[in-house]
Length: 464
Image 1: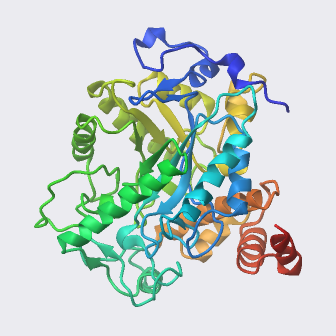
Image 2: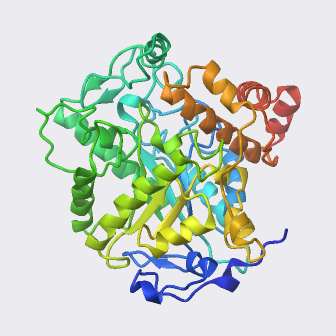
């Protein structure tokens, strides 16, 4: 169907919550309303293409033609904001083999990220407001594998606040997997100068993003990454003195509780230095951010609803204590918002300002225009999840992703969606019928990802 322009349903609201009675009753009009950030930037609507691994390229480096092709599809989709996948500030430490990095901060690196930005903006329809573009800069900390990311020798440990490795379960298979991915425990950072070097990496990364014309950066301090590890009792010693608090949203058993996370967020907001704060959750040991539920079953399943309730409750109780944008940062809620109704309800009940959408954007890159803001799509059909991954459940249990290795269960879904991004990067449409093993692992990961598509793919790549 040809989507009706989102601008035709846009509200002229100021972008703040204001009085609940002042919000439009119409869900599309509400979601299409703008949000003004503290620095004056206006996000044209409430829908954010959240950061997610693109599944393109290996061993780090700058974006290539496939990334530009993929992001063009998101650029033409009607998003209010687009956030990149991981751009690691330290090229030696990747979270996955597909992460992009800053090999250096030379003019050629700046030009590569500027080209990615311009490719997005070039695809925005003339009558549509352009999305706000953020680059997510990250450091995975102890979760960086030395064996699968090809970024450092296998015997070189990851770094973190303590000597540890992610917990992949208590079964024999889980124990073996953790030793394959992380042969050695992480090396604790004890030298203050090393910490200053890491801080400098983030600063130089942000400067590079600004030089490349991006609207801003998002600092990844969730999902058990380095900045989160220093706050979580799961990964840092109680004897370690923490003089500076940095946000983490790892709502996992034994991790930060709601009161601790609220305190950290309020401290961050009090600095008056941030414009948007994303609430997510989980880490590699307890991957709430990439659970299998909700995409292999009805989005109203008990697990999916529980996850939605968890984060919505947290933000709903937190937001009354925070100034609404532009007086304070916009709160973005990512995960569990699987329908137009849920998104509108989250905004209307003060659970969030912005709705972050990840995996559905991999199969419907123009999801805002095609579904959420499309007037001809009735409310009951404006859903983002509820689809099954062919072969997903079978592979999940064959690979030990039941109760033994939660990371595998999450990975089944994550990989399938990354492979859909890989298709988009080649200029091919997503395939909802793609079998996880035959179509995903063998064709997308091995044939196209590792072998480059054979002679025909090599020729096409060489021709550019």
